[in-house]
Length: 107
Length: 117
Image (cartoon, rainbow over all chains, first blue to last red; front, side, top):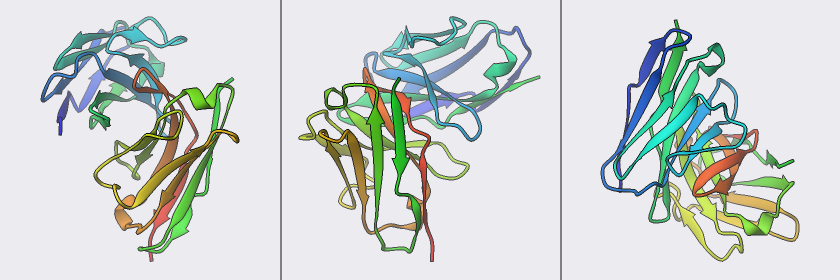
């Protein structure tokens, strides 16, 4: 099975900061990676699919890059509404795997 | 507007069974892979199972293989998850989700399944 490692596990940043979260896969997955935002008590919300495609309606401050084994989610200017837990998710060989998540807090 | 509404959760004893349902609307249900994803209390997300649009193909996480069965009724736009031999570790909110390029585009509100004696 492919293992995923997401870092950092928590981060605290100020409004307006540029924030980057990284996911690494133990073997190449091409571009089959998605990013989600989950707020407390709510279902996850898809932000990015196929590594870099922004889902319709998602603010443009969110972006995704990467392919193969290393992927990043960037929030270009952190907003108060971005306080949440962020997960990456890979697809490989008829199996979907989520990372352990990054909790983003606003200072 | 896409809507996914789960139901069927509840309290069940270890070794028991539950059937979850997900009623879908607002899109061509039979054209999409549909999945179940769960989240144990205070924990992260775990993919459980997926069903191809026609219902012919299905895929399972190792943790549920042989105990859970995914099915769908494309005439009624309903996705099911039949859960047998339930364990305490299966306690979770179960979400159904619609596929987008092998990600999960739309999610329901979830239904809580609690396995406890």
